[in-house]
Length: 191
Image (cartoon, rainbow, N blue to C red; front, side, top):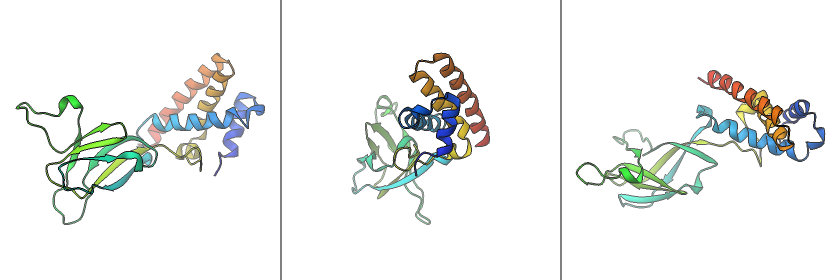
Protein backbone atom coordinates (compact mmCIF):
# COMPACT_ATOMS: atom_id res chain seq x y z
CA UNK A 1 0.00 0.00 0.00
CA UNK A 2 1.34 3.40 -0.93
CA UNK A 3 0.99 6.53 1.14
CA UNK A 4 -2.74 7.36 1.23
CA UNK A 5 -3.67 9.90 -1.43
CA UNK A 6 -5.76 11.85 1.09
CA UNK A 7 -2.71 12.33 3.31
CA UNK A 8 -0.70 13.64 0.35
CA UNK A 9 -3.61 15.92 -0.58
CA UNK A 10 -3.79 17.24 2.99
CA UNK A 11 -0.11 18.21 2.91
CA UNK A 12 -0.53 19.79 -0.55
CA UNK A 13 -3.50 21.80 0.75
CA UNK A 14 -1.53 23.05 3.75
CA UNK A 15 1.66 23.88 1.83
CA UNK A 16 0.15 24.92 -1.49
CA UNK A 17 2.94 22.97 -3.20
CA UNK A 18 1.30 20.46 -5.57
CA UNK A 19 4.57 20.50 -7.54
CA UNK A 20 6.23 18.52 -4.71
CA UNK A 21 3.85 15.53 -4.67
CA UNK A 22 6.35 13.27 -6.44
CA UNK A 23 9.38 14.27 -4.42
CA UNK A 24 9.47 16.11 -1.11
CA UNK A 25 5.94 15.55 0.19
CA UNK A 26 6.04 11.70 0.30
CA UNK A 27 9.45 11.83 1.97
CA UNK A 28 8.17 14.38 4.50
CA UNK A 29 5.17 12.15 5.25
CA UNK A 30 7.46 9.17 5.83
CA UNK A 31 9.71 11.20 8.15
CA UNK A 32 6.74 12.67 10.02
CA UNK A 33 5.19 9.24 10.49
CA UNK A 34 8.39 7.79 11.97
CA UNK A 35 8.84 10.79 14.26
CA UNK A 36 5.25 10.66 15.50
CA UNK A 37 5.50 6.96 16.33
CA UNK A 38 8.80 7.59 18.13
CA UNK A 39 7.30 10.45 20.15
CA UNK A 40 5.81 8.09 22.75
CA UNK A 41 5.72 4.43 23.70
CA UNK A 42 2.30 3.60 22.30
CA UNK A 43 0.85 0.21 23.18
CA UNK A 44 -0.18 -0.26 19.54
CA UNK A 45 3.52 -0.19 18.54
CA UNK A 46 4.41 -2.92 21.05
CA UNK A 47 5.25 -6.32 19.61
CA UNK A 48 7.39 -9.30 20.56
CA UNK A 49 9.73 -11.87 19.08
CA UNK A 50 10.95 -15.17 20.51
CA UNK A 51 14.56 -15.98 19.67
CA UNK A 52 16.17 -19.36 20.41
CA UNK A 53 19.38 -19.09 22.42
CA UNK A 54 20.98 -22.20 20.85
CA UNK A 55 23.21 -22.60 23.89
CA UNK A 56 23.29 -23.95 27.42
CA UNK A 57 25.73 -21.22 28.45
CA UNK A 58 24.65 -18.74 31.09
CA UNK A 59 26.26 -15.89 29.13
CA UNK A 60 25.32 -15.45 25.48
CA UNK A 61 24.56 -12.85 22.83
CA UNK A 62 21.50 -12.47 20.64
CA UNK A 63 21.58 -10.59 17.36
CA UNK A 64 18.75 -8.07 17.17
CA UNK A 65 18.81 -7.89 13.38
CA UNK A 66 16.10 -10.55 13.32
CA UNK A 67 13.67 -8.06 14.92
CA UNK A 68 11.37 -6.19 12.54
CA UNK A 69 11.93 -2.41 12.65
CA UNK A 70 12.84 -2.21 16.36
CA UNK A 71 12.69 1.17 18.06
CA UNK A 72 13.06 0.54 21.80
CA UNK A 73 13.17 -2.55 23.96
CA UNK A 74 10.43 -2.70 26.57
CA UNK A 75 11.37 -6.01 28.22
CA UNK A 76 13.53 -9.10 27.82
CA UNK A 77 12.27 -12.29 29.41
CA UNK A 78 12.01 -16.00 29.16
CA UNK A 79 8.81 -16.83 27.24
CA UNK A 80 5.82 -17.81 29.33
CA UNK A 81 5.08 -21.52 29.01
CA UNK A 82 2.12 -22.78 30.99
CA UNK A 83 3.15 -25.13 33.76
CA UNK A 84 6.88 -24.46 33.25
CA UNK A 85 7.42 -22.71 36.55
CA UNK A 86 8.89 -19.29 37.19
CA UNK A 87 10.09 -17.29 34.20
CA UNK A 88 13.13 -15.04 34.21
CA UNK A 89 12.66 -11.34 33.63
CA UNK A 90 15.98 -9.79 32.62
CA UNK A 91 16.91 -6.33 33.90
CA UNK A 92 18.53 -3.78 31.63
CA UNK A 93 21.90 -2.79 33.07
CA UNK A 94 24.65 -0.46 31.98
CA UNK A 95 28.26 -1.59 31.78
CA UNK A 96 28.97 0.31 35.04
CA UNK A 97 26.31 -1.61 36.96
CA UNK A 98 27.23 -5.26 36.28
CA UNK A 99 28.68 -6.02 39.73
CA UNK A 100 27.06 -5.89 43.15
CA UNK A 101 28.43 -4.32 46.33
CA UNK A 102 30.60 -7.39 47.01
CA UNK A 103 32.14 -7.46 43.52
CA UNK A 104 30.10 -10.44 42.29
CA UNK A 105 28.63 -10.24 38.81
CA UNK A 106 24.87 -9.86 38.77
CA UNK A 107 22.67 -12.34 36.89
CA UNK A 108 19.44 -12.15 34.92
CA UNK A 109 20.34 -9.00 33.06
CA UNK A 110 20.89 -7.82 29.53
CA UNK A 111 23.23 -5.23 28.13
CA UNK A 112 22.60 -3.72 24.70
CA UNK A 113 25.75 -3.35 22.60
CA UNK A 114 25.09 -2.18 19.06
CA UNK A 115 22.82 -4.73 17.39
CA UNK A 116 23.51 -7.37 20.05
CA UNK A 117 21.96 -8.15 23.39
CA UNK A 118 24.49 -9.60 25.79
CA UNK A 119 22.60 -11.68 28.33
CA UNK A 120 23.67 -13.22 31.63
CA UNK A 121 21.21 -15.67 33.17
CA UNK A 122 21.12 -17.51 36.49
CA UNK A 123 20.20 -20.74 34.66
CA UNK A 124 20.15 -21.89 31.04
CA UNK A 125 17.17 -20.83 28.94
CA UNK A 126 16.11 -22.23 25.58
CA UNK A 127 14.40 -19.08 24.25
CA UNK A 128 14.33 -15.37 24.92
CA UNK A 129 11.28 -13.20 24.30
CA UNK A 130 11.97 -9.59 23.42
CA UNK A 131 9.09 -7.16 23.80
CA UNK A 132 9.83 -4.03 21.82
CA UNK A 133 8.31 -0.94 20.30
CA UNK A 134 8.33 -1.15 16.54
CA UNK A 135 8.55 1.54 13.88
CA UNK A 136 5.77 1.33 11.28
CA UNK A 137 6.52 0.34 7.72
CA UNK A 138 6.60 3.62 5.81
CA UNK A 139 8.71 2.60 2.81
CA UNK A 140 7.48 -0.68 1.31
CA UNK A 141 3.90 -1.06 2.52
CA UNK A 142 2.95 2.21 4.22
CA UNK A 143 1.01 1.34 7.36
CA UNK A 144 0.51 3.61 10.34
CA UNK A 145 -2.29 3.50 12.86
CA UNK A 146 -1.52 7.15 13.66
CA UNK A 147 -2.02 8.11 10.00
CA UNK A 148 -5.27 6.12 10.00
CA UNK A 149 -6.70 7.51 13.26
CA UNK A 150 -5.05 10.94 13.44
CA UNK A 151 -4.08 11.93 9.87
CA UNK A 152 -3.96 15.64 10.73
CA UNK A 153 -1.04 15.00 13.10
CA UNK A 154 1.02 13.45 10.29
CA UNK A 155 -0.13 16.13 7.81
CA UNK A 156 0.86 19.01 10.12
CA UNK A 157 4.23 17.47 10.90
CA UNK A 158 4.91 16.69 7.22
CA UNK A 159 3.90 20.25 6.27
CA UNK A 160 6.39 21.62 8.80
CA UNK A 161 9.13 19.49 7.19
CA UNK A 162 8.17 20.73 3.71
CA UNK A 163 8.07 24.35 4.86
CA UNK A 164 11.48 23.98 6.53
CA UNK A 165 12.92 22.42 3.37
CA UNK A 166 11.74 25.26 1.16
CA UNK A 167 12.97 27.96 3.54
CA UNK A 168 9.69 29.05 5.11
CA UNK A 169 10.85 28.84 8.71
CA UNK A 170 7.89 30.73 10.26
CA UNK A 171 5.34 28.38 8.70
CA UNK A 172 7.51 25.41 9.60
CA UNK A 173 7.57 26.50 13.23
CA UNK A 174 3.81 27.08 13.31
CA UNK A 175 2.97 23.63 11.91
CA UNK A 176 5.58 21.95 14.10
CA UNK A 177 3.81 23.53 17.09
CA UNK A 178 0.48 22.22 15.74
CA UNK A 179 1.95 18.73 15.47
CA UNK A 180 3.24 18.84 19.05
CA UNK A 181 -0.14 20.05 20.31
CA UNK A 182 -1.94 17.37 18.30
CA UNK A 183 0.40 14.73 19.74
CA UNK A 184 -1.24 15.34 23.10
CA UNK A 185 -4.54 14.26 21.54
CA UNK A 186 -2.95 10.96 20.50
CA UNK A 187 -1.56 10.39 23.98
CA UNK A 188 -4.90 11.09 25.64
CA UNK A 189 -6.75 8.96 23.08
CA UNK A 190 -4.43 5.99 23.59
CA UNK A 191 -4.71 5.75 27.38
